[in-house]
Length: 122
Length: 107
Image (cartoon, rainbow over all chains, first blue to last red; front, side):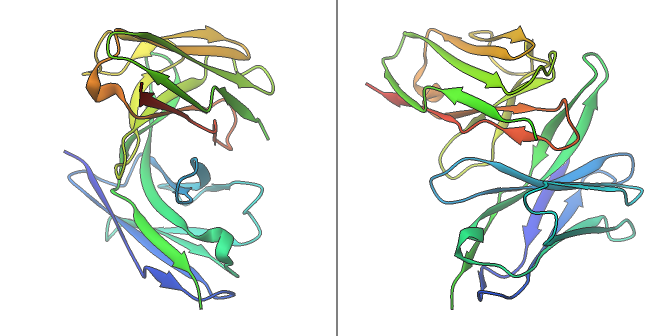
C-alpha cells in the first residue's frame, strides 16, 4: 500500500521560504508524477504544481514565480519550496500521487498524504 | 487557466435524500473531470474519474455525468457517512484546477 507523508516546519515567518518534503513508502517514486496541493483553513483546494519522476515540472501560473519542486529518487522523496511567503500562504499542504487511468485516459490524484499545516506568522 | 465553478457551495439534506452537485468548466474539458470527497481533518478521496467512472470501492449510490463544460455528481440515498465536502477537478490541462467545493450538511 502506497503511503505519503509530508514533513517540515509548521510555522514560517513572512518573507521567508516554506520548505516541505514528501516521503513515499510502499512504492517507487519512479514512473509517476507527484503533486503538491494546498488548502487554506476552511477553504477549497488549490493545485500548486507537479514533478514527473524524470524531473519535468509544471506549476500553477499564479504561484509559478515563487515555487520550486524537486525530487530525490534515491530517497523516494519529493520537495516543495515556496519563496517570499505571506499570511495568504497559510494552509494545509498535501502531497499526492498522480496516476494515469489507462481505461479512461485521465490523470487522477489517487494517493494523498495526511497534510501538513503551515502557518505564516511572525 | 481553466476555471471550475461548483454549485451550490453548501446544501442541507436528510438521510435518504437525493443530492445533486454541479460543476462547470470555463472551457470544454471533454470528460477529463474527477470528483473527490473530503471529510473534516482528512485528505480528499477519489470518488469518480473521467466524469462517470466509479473508483473501486466507492458505493454505487454515487454517480457522475456530463461532458464538455457541464458536469454533475449525484448521491442517491444520502447516508450518514456522506456528509462531507465534494470537489470537482479537471485534468484536461497540465495545470490542474479544482472547483470551490460543495459542503453537504445534515438538515
